[in-house]
Image (cartoon, rainbow, N blue to C red; front, top):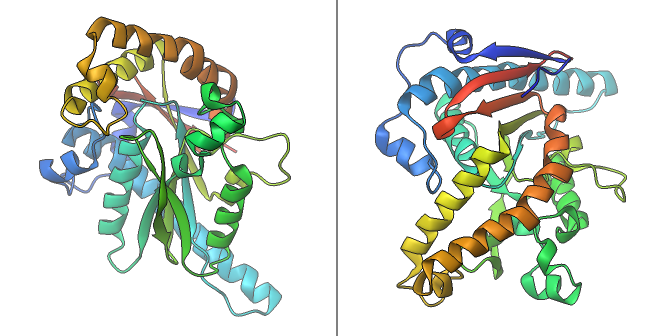
Length: 307
Protein backbone atom coordinates (compact mmCIF):
# COMPACT_ATOMS: atom_id res chain seq x y z
CA UNK A 1 0.00 0.00 0.00
CA UNK A 2 1.26 3.44 -0.86
CA UNK A 3 1.50 5.94 1.94
CA UNK A 4 -1.62 8.08 2.01
CA UNK A 5 -1.12 11.84 2.44
CA UNK A 6 -3.48 12.16 5.39
CA UNK A 7 -2.27 9.10 7.34
CA UNK A 8 0.52 8.33 9.74
CA UNK A 9 2.20 5.13 8.61
CA UNK A 10 3.10 3.07 11.68
CA UNK A 11 5.12 -0.12 11.54
CA UNK A 12 4.04 -3.04 13.72
CA UNK A 13 7.03 -2.76 16.05
CA UNK A 14 6.13 0.89 16.68
CA UNK A 15 2.38 0.36 17.02
CA UNK A 16 2.72 -2.29 19.72
CA UNK A 17 4.41 0.28 22.00
CA UNK A 18 1.17 2.25 22.26
CA UNK A 19 -0.21 -0.22 24.80
CA UNK A 20 1.96 -1.25 27.75
CA UNK A 21 -0.29 -3.26 30.03
CA UNK A 22 1.33 -6.68 30.02
CA UNK A 23 -0.02 -9.78 28.35
CA UNK A 24 -3.11 -9.87 26.17
CA UNK A 25 -6.16 -10.59 28.39
CA UNK A 26 -7.36 -13.46 26.21
CA UNK A 27 -6.90 -17.20 26.18
CA UNK A 28 -6.39 -19.31 23.08
CA UNK A 29 -9.99 -20.51 23.48
CA UNK A 30 -11.20 -16.89 23.38
CA UNK A 31 -9.16 -16.34 20.25
CA UNK A 32 -10.50 -19.47 18.56
CA UNK A 33 -14.03 -18.24 19.28
CA UNK A 34 -13.33 -14.93 17.57
CA UNK A 35 -11.45 -16.31 14.58
CA UNK A 36 -13.28 -16.68 11.29
CA UNK A 37 -13.02 -19.74 9.09
CA UNK A 38 -9.45 -20.16 7.80
CA UNK A 39 -8.34 -16.83 9.27
CA UNK A 40 -5.03 -16.75 11.11
CA UNK A 41 -4.48 -14.75 14.26
CA UNK A 42 -2.30 -15.24 17.32
CA UNK A 43 -2.18 -14.02 20.91
CA UNK A 44 0.82 -11.94 19.81
CA UNK A 45 -1.48 -10.23 17.27
CA UNK A 46 -3.93 -9.46 20.05
CA UNK A 47 -1.22 -7.97 22.25
CA UNK A 48 0.69 -6.08 19.56
CA UNK A 49 -2.12 -4.95 17.23
CA UNK A 50 -5.56 -5.20 18.80
CA UNK A 51 -4.83 -4.02 22.33
CA UNK A 52 -3.37 -0.70 21.06
CA UNK A 53 -6.36 -0.48 18.69
CA UNK A 54 -8.75 -1.08 21.57
CA UNK A 55 -6.97 1.65 23.53
CA UNK A 56 -7.32 4.07 20.59
CA UNK A 57 -11.06 3.31 20.41
CA UNK A 58 -11.19 4.09 24.12
CA UNK A 59 -9.75 7.56 23.38
CA UNK A 60 -12.33 8.18 20.65
CA UNK A 61 -15.13 6.83 22.86
CA UNK A 62 -14.27 9.20 25.72
CA UNK A 63 -14.18 12.14 23.30
CA UNK A 64 -17.54 11.07 21.87
CA UNK A 65 -19.19 10.91 25.28
CA UNK A 66 -17.82 14.34 26.17
CA UNK A 67 -19.07 15.85 22.90
CA UNK A 68 -22.52 14.33 23.42
CA UNK A 69 -22.75 15.93 26.85
CA UNK A 70 -21.41 19.30 25.63
CA UNK A 71 -23.95 19.36 22.81
CA UNK A 72 -26.79 18.56 25.20
CA UNK A 73 -25.63 21.30 27.56
CA UNK A 74 -25.51 23.81 24.70
CA UNK A 75 -29.05 22.92 23.62
CA UNK A 76 -30.22 22.82 27.24
CA UNK A 77 -31.49 19.33 26.75
CA UNK A 78 -31.16 16.23 28.82
CA UNK A 79 -28.40 14.11 27.29
CA UNK A 80 -29.84 10.92 25.81
CA UNK A 81 -27.98 7.73 25.13
CA UNK A 82 -26.64 7.42 21.59
CA UNK A 83 -24.41 4.45 20.82
CA UNK A 84 -20.81 4.83 19.74
CA UNK A 85 -20.60 3.03 16.39
CA UNK A 86 -17.50 1.37 14.97
CA UNK A 87 -17.50 0.48 11.26
CA UNK A 88 -15.25 -2.23 9.79
CA UNK A 89 -14.79 -2.48 6.01
CA UNK A 90 -12.67 -4.45 3.57
CA UNK A 91 -12.81 -7.18 0.94
CA UNK A 92 -14.42 -10.57 1.27
CA UNK A 93 -12.07 -13.12 2.91
CA UNK A 94 -9.76 -10.42 4.32
CA UNK A 95 -10.71 -11.04 7.97
CA UNK A 96 -13.28 -8.35 8.79
CA UNK A 97 -15.43 -10.70 10.88
CA UNK A 98 -12.47 -11.80 12.97
CA UNK A 99 -11.57 -8.17 13.64
CA UNK A 100 -15.18 -7.39 14.59
CA UNK A 101 -15.59 -10.34 16.96
CA UNK A 102 -12.21 -9.80 18.56
CA UNK A 103 -12.94 -6.14 19.21
CA UNK A 104 -16.32 -7.10 20.64
CA UNK A 105 -14.58 -9.39 23.16
CA UNK A 106 -11.90 -6.84 24.03
CA UNK A 107 -14.36 -3.96 24.41
CA UNK A 108 -16.71 -6.10 26.52
CA UNK A 109 -13.85 -6.83 28.89
CA UNK A 110 -12.69 -3.23 28.89
CA UNK A 111 -16.20 -1.97 29.68
CA UNK A 112 -17.88 -4.66 31.83
CA UNK A 113 -20.80 -2.35 32.66
CA UNK A 114 -21.43 -1.40 29.01
CA UNK A 115 -23.44 -3.24 26.38
CA UNK A 116 -21.37 -4.12 23.31
CA UNK A 117 -23.02 -5.60 20.20
CA UNK A 118 -21.78 -6.66 16.78
CA UNK A 119 -23.68 -6.80 13.49
CA UNK A 120 -22.85 -7.56 9.85
CA UNK A 121 -24.45 -5.86 6.87
CA UNK A 122 -24.78 -9.23 5.07
CA UNK A 123 -28.32 -9.40 6.39
CA UNK A 124 -29.22 -6.33 4.34
CA UNK A 125 -28.52 -8.05 1.05
CA UNK A 126 -31.67 -8.68 -0.93
CA UNK A 127 -32.75 -12.32 -0.77
CA UNK A 128 -31.62 -14.59 -3.59
CA UNK A 129 -35.20 -14.70 -4.85
CA UNK A 130 -35.35 -10.90 -4.97
CA UNK A 131 -31.93 -10.71 -6.64
CA UNK A 132 -33.12 -13.16 -9.30
CA UNK A 133 -36.26 -11.09 -9.80
CA UNK A 134 -34.16 -7.96 -10.29
CA UNK A 135 -31.62 -9.72 -12.51
CA UNK A 136 -28.90 -9.06 -9.95
CA UNK A 137 -27.90 -12.52 -8.72
CA UNK A 138 -24.62 -12.35 -10.64
CA UNK A 139 -24.01 -8.97 -8.97
CA UNK A 140 -24.44 -10.23 -5.42
CA UNK A 141 -22.18 -8.23 -3.13
CA UNK A 142 -22.11 -5.19 -5.42
CA UNK A 143 -23.71 -1.99 -4.07
CA UNK A 144 -27.00 -2.47 -5.91
CA UNK A 145 -27.54 -5.90 -4.30
CA UNK A 146 -28.08 -4.34 -0.87
CA UNK A 147 -31.31 -2.87 0.45
CA UNK A 148 -29.60 0.39 1.34
CA UNK A 149 -32.84 2.14 2.26
CA UNK A 150 -33.48 -0.50 4.90
CA UNK A 151 -29.88 -0.37 6.16
CA UNK A 152 -29.96 3.42 6.48
CA UNK A 153 -33.27 3.24 8.36
CA UNK A 154 -31.75 0.61 10.66
CA UNK A 155 -28.69 2.77 11.37
CA UNK A 156 -30.86 5.81 12.00
CA UNK A 157 -33.03 3.93 14.50
CA UNK A 158 -29.92 2.65 16.30
CA UNK A 159 -28.20 6.03 16.48
CA UNK A 160 -31.35 7.71 17.75
CA UNK A 161 -31.82 4.95 20.32
CA UNK A 162 -35.40 4.25 19.25
CA UNK A 163 -35.53 0.97 21.12
CA UNK A 164 -34.90 -2.63 20.07
CA UNK A 165 -34.23 -2.82 16.34
CA UNK A 166 -34.31 -6.00 14.24
CA UNK A 167 -31.47 -6.77 11.84
CA UNK A 168 -32.15 -9.51 9.27
CA UNK A 169 -29.90 -12.56 9.53
CA UNK A 170 -27.82 -14.04 6.72
CA UNK A 171 -26.59 -17.63 6.46
CA UNK A 172 -23.30 -18.43 4.76
CA UNK A 173 -24.38 -22.07 4.77
CA UNK A 174 -27.49 -21.44 2.68
CA UNK A 175 -25.93 -18.39 0.98
CA UNK A 176 -29.17 -16.47 1.56
CA UNK A 177 -31.21 -14.40 3.99
CA UNK A 178 -32.85 -16.50 6.73
CA UNK A 179 -36.58 -15.85 6.53
CA UNK A 180 -38.14 -14.46 9.73
CA UNK A 181 -34.87 -14.62 11.67
CA UNK A 182 -33.34 -11.52 13.19
CA UNK A 183 -30.59 -10.23 15.44
CA UNK A 184 -31.99 -7.84 18.03
CA UNK A 185 -29.94 -4.70 18.59
CA UNK A 186 -31.18 -3.27 21.87
CA UNK A 187 -29.73 0.06 23.03
CA UNK A 188 -26.02 -0.84 22.91
CA UNK A 189 -23.40 1.51 24.30
CA UNK A 190 -21.04 0.44 21.50
CA UNK A 191 -22.13 -1.16 18.24
CA UNK A 192 -19.69 -2.73 15.76
CA UNK A 193 -20.96 -2.77 12.17
CA UNK A 194 -18.97 -4.94 9.77
CA UNK A 195 -19.39 -5.29 6.01
CA UNK A 196 -17.84 -4.73 2.60
CA UNK A 197 -20.17 -1.80 1.93
CA UNK A 198 -20.07 0.22 5.14
CA UNK A 199 -17.79 2.99 3.81
CA UNK A 200 -19.34 3.20 0.35
CA UNK A 201 -21.07 6.29 -1.02
CA UNK A 202 -24.16 5.20 -2.99
CA UNK A 203 -24.96 7.88 -5.54
CA UNK A 204 -28.70 7.76 -4.92
CA UNK A 205 -28.52 8.25 -1.14
CA UNK A 206 -28.62 11.60 0.66
CA UNK A 207 -27.09 10.02 3.76
CA UNK A 208 -24.50 7.24 3.95
CA UNK A 209 -23.95 4.37 6.35
CA UNK A 210 -20.61 5.86 7.35
CA UNK A 211 -22.33 9.08 8.45
CA UNK A 212 -23.42 7.15 11.55
CA UNK A 213 -19.89 5.98 12.42
CA UNK A 214 -17.76 7.44 15.19
CA UNK A 215 -14.72 5.33 14.37
CA UNK A 216 -13.94 3.27 11.27
CA UNK A 217 -11.44 0.57 10.30
CA UNK A 218 -10.45 -0.77 6.89
CA UNK A 219 -8.80 -4.21 6.74
CA UNK A 220 -6.43 -4.15 3.78
CA UNK A 221 -4.26 -6.61 1.84
CA UNK A 222 -2.88 -7.17 -1.64
CA UNK A 223 -5.66 -8.60 -3.87
CA UNK A 224 -3.36 -11.49 -4.83
CA UNK A 225 -3.21 -12.53 -1.18
CA UNK A 226 -6.93 -12.03 -0.68
CA UNK A 227 -7.65 -14.30 -3.65
CA UNK A 228 -5.53 -17.04 -2.06
CA UNK A 229 -7.34 -16.63 1.27
CA UNK A 230 -10.66 -16.71 -0.58
CA UNK A 231 -9.75 -19.97 -2.30
CA UNK A 232 -8.33 -21.47 0.89
CA UNK A 233 -11.60 -20.66 2.68
CA UNK A 234 -13.60 -22.16 -0.17
CA UNK A 235 -11.65 -25.43 0.15
CA UNK A 236 -12.37 -25.54 3.88
CA UNK A 237 -16.06 -24.94 3.15
CA UNK A 238 -16.02 -27.89 0.75
CA UNK A 239 -14.41 -30.09 3.41
CA UNK A 240 -17.14 -29.23 5.92
CA UNK A 241 -20.20 -29.33 3.63
CA UNK A 242 -20.21 -32.85 2.18
CA UNK A 243 -22.44 -34.29 4.95
CA UNK A 244 -25.16 -31.64 4.76
CA UNK A 245 -27.37 -31.66 1.64
CA UNK A 246 -28.96 -28.35 2.72
CA UNK A 247 -25.61 -26.57 2.61
CA UNK A 248 -25.07 -24.29 -0.40
CA UNK A 249 -21.64 -25.82 -0.92
CA UNK A 250 -22.84 -29.45 -0.78
CA UNK A 251 -23.13 -29.96 -4.58
CA UNK A 252 -19.59 -28.67 -5.00
CA UNK A 253 -18.33 -30.75 -2.07
CA UNK A 254 -19.59 -34.03 -3.53
CA UNK A 255 -18.70 -33.15 -7.12
CA UNK A 256 -15.45 -32.81 -8.98
CA UNK A 257 -12.99 -30.94 -6.77
CA UNK A 258 -11.05 -29.28 -9.58
CA UNK A 259 -14.23 -28.08 -11.26
CA UNK A 260 -15.42 -26.60 -7.97
CA UNK A 261 -12.17 -24.73 -7.43
CA UNK A 262 -12.19 -23.50 -11.03
CA UNK A 263 -15.71 -22.20 -10.40
CA UNK A 264 -14.53 -20.36 -7.27
CA UNK A 265 -11.63 -18.83 -9.20
CA UNK A 266 -14.07 -17.61 -11.83
CA UNK A 267 -16.33 -16.07 -9.18
CA UNK A 268 -13.35 -14.25 -7.75
CA UNK A 269 -12.22 -12.92 -11.12
CA UNK A 270 -15.67 -11.92 -12.41
CA UNK A 271 -17.36 -10.81 -9.18
CA UNK A 272 -15.28 -10.32 -6.05
CA UNK A 273 -12.17 -8.79 -7.61
CA UNK A 274 -14.08 -6.21 -9.72
CA UNK A 275 -16.20 -5.38 -6.66
CA UNK A 276 -13.05 -4.90 -4.60
CA UNK A 277 -11.34 -2.82 -7.26
CA UNK A 278 -14.29 -0.62 -8.21
CA UNK A 279 -16.33 -0.23 -5.03
CA UNK A 280 -14.54 -1.46 -1.89
CA UNK A 281 -10.91 -0.39 -2.26
CA UNK A 282 -11.83 3.24 -3.14
CA UNK A 283 -13.39 3.53 0.34
CA UNK A 284 -10.12 2.71 2.12
CA UNK A 285 -9.10 6.36 2.45
CA UNK A 286 -12.31 7.12 4.37
CA UNK A 287 -11.30 4.95 7.35
CA UNK A 288 -9.80 6.29 10.57
CA UNK A 289 -7.47 3.30 10.78
CA UNK A 290 -6.20 0.97 8.05
CA UNK A 291 -4.88 -2.43 9.14
CA UNK A 292 -2.60 -3.71 6.38
CA UNK A 293 -2.06 -7.46 6.17
CA UNK A 294 0.67 -9.42 4.50
CA UNK A 295 1.37 -13.18 4.24
CA UNK A 296 -0.55 -15.43 6.66
CA UNK A 297 -2.88 -12.57 7.64
CA UNK A 298 -0.06 -10.90 9.56
CA UNK A 299 -0.66 -7.19 10.11
CA UNK A 300 2.62 -5.43 9.35
CA UNK A 301 1.54 -1.79 9.01
CA UNK A 302 -1.11 0.43 10.54
CA UNK A 303 -2.26 3.71 9.00
CA UNK A 304 -3.81 6.26 11.34
CA UNK A 305 -5.72 9.19 9.89
CA UNK A 306 -4.16 12.57 10.64
CA UNK A 307 -7.21 14.74 9.92
